Length: 347
Ligand code: 13P
Ligand code: SF4
Image 1 (cartoon, rainbow, N blue to C red):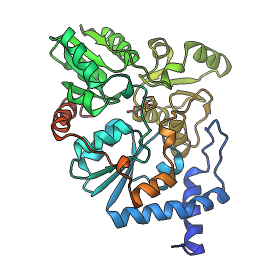
Image 2: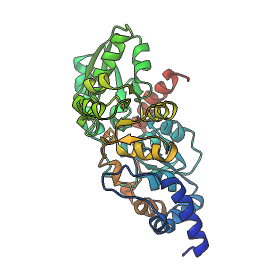
Image 3: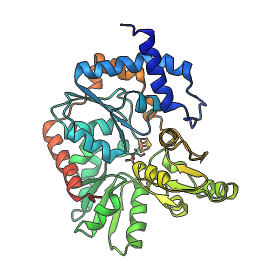
Image 4: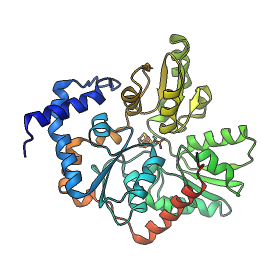
């Protein structure tokens, strides 16, 4: 069904209002009235399908901004989106993010049909360790409490005692009764946890597996030094998936949600965001007065999401786009995530 010209124009205006200032993409893609008018039939159709199917769309901040601002109902970091998935009352949850996030939504909302637009949207962290490999590691450290970063498969969550996100990892690990922690799958975040807990005077032994995020492990202290030399007063904002050297040289380290909050509430002349480019896009929409300098990178998995795939998956999902989990495994994984909700800081 083709929308009337006035409806398309109103939708193009709505999109342009959000996307006008976004220019962070290495591709150089910009949004103007013409590009927004071209997107309007798709966003209108997706928003109509959402009503028809009783669906909500959860969008991680790293997906393209026309998805976040054109069709997203909830936008944020992994913790926020997990809570949104748990509380969702809709029959259908479409997760514009990556597969482990859609699996998490299914774990927490088992009665909903959970859809992932592209089954290939993996994650170098989640894909770095299987349930079987974790079982072997656990056998080597039987006294350890097993903590999994949310960037892990449902299988790995089912083998873990407690899940954490980038927003609550320090708090949860610091407050666990066990001294020995087996932390999977992010080796770099594991080192950041060691360093932070040492700073807080908390005595823990952190054993990690060997995964890294293929986006965040690319940043280096040399990038930071070069940027600081060129932009006096610069604030460097990093994600805890970066190396310990990068985290030590940054002004702020936190989840994507916390990074956004930091930028919005501080008054620096320039920011260097050591994370995926989509977050800079979100800030250009929500804090257009801030200045960002280069240095961000793309996650190829997050970028597999597109409006076309979302429309097609909502209209008639293929079997590979519907998340299904073994019920026993789902229940065990749910326990590990529920434990995270219980142990998370309340502020
Ligand atoms: P956040 O939970 O901080 O958004 O991190 C998710 C992620 O995949 C970072 O690479
Ligand atoms: Fe995984 Fe890194 Fe992509 Fe986040 S940015 S989804 S951690 S590969």
